[in-house]
Length: 115
Length: 110
Image 1 (cartoon, helix red, strand yellow):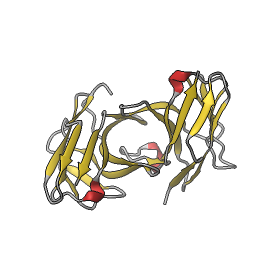
Image 2 (cartoon, each protein chain N blue to C red; image 1 turned 90 degrees about the horizontal axis):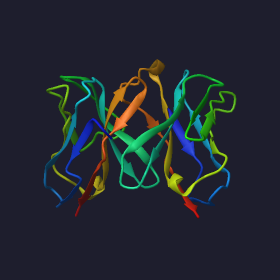
Image 3 (cartoon, chains in turn red, orange; image 1 turned 30 degrees about the vertical axis):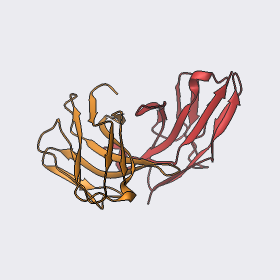
Image 4 (cartoon, chains in turn cyan, blue; image 1 turned 45 degrees about the vertical axis):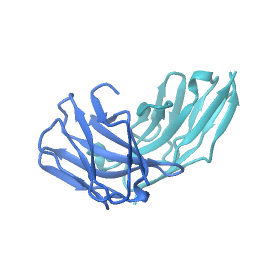
């Protein structure tokens, strides 16, 4: 079955540092890939997505590129802020894009950014 | 989290008790799902629904029941709670390829 593996956390950075959170996946066919973010006490929110190979998703300074050859979708940000402190989840949706609300999530990576 | 309302926010149960977690949406969309979130395991799909009267099992359905009598509501029932069901539960509505999550229910089973 489908699976998503994220780098082990937690990750602790100083403000303005560069961020990378690794994500690799296993799936049949051509899945869509997502990064969701969860701020303390809240539900998950979509951060960015990519639907086909070589697509780059971007939002709020975060970027991730869909690499089919390495089955990866690493999240990056050039300069993190304290407000980026949250839990980040990599996820995939299969079934040709009509996933019926069914996503496969990675285990989540806790990011803490210090001033 | 606008549009997806979960109640209650917190609940403590004793082993063997039953309860229903409520989920309501005002976005009039067909696809709804329930996930549980556990440390180090991400979110795992419990049940999902593609419309009123249609539900199906996800990855971890045992111990949970669902029904979908209306488009708006998708309740999750625990018939006999067990400590292994201690978790944070999220309801979600899918619009296009995007999931909109509720704010979650934190459940403890003693």
